[in-house]
Length: 68
Image (cartoon, rainbow, N blue to C red; front, side, top):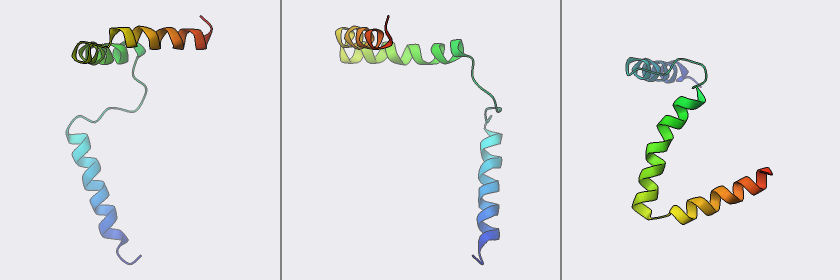
């Protein structure tokens, strides 16, 4: 408990370093931006693992679970 000042300084330095590297402002990301970020990775995983059938099966299962 006597060493709380140094821990606070270390945390503040970490926050400053994060902000220096373009930390995201507070708020929510637009759903289209999030989708645009995820789709390339999802497509890469489908191609690498050859899992198109698995993707279709999972999407179908989720659709049924959601009632569509």
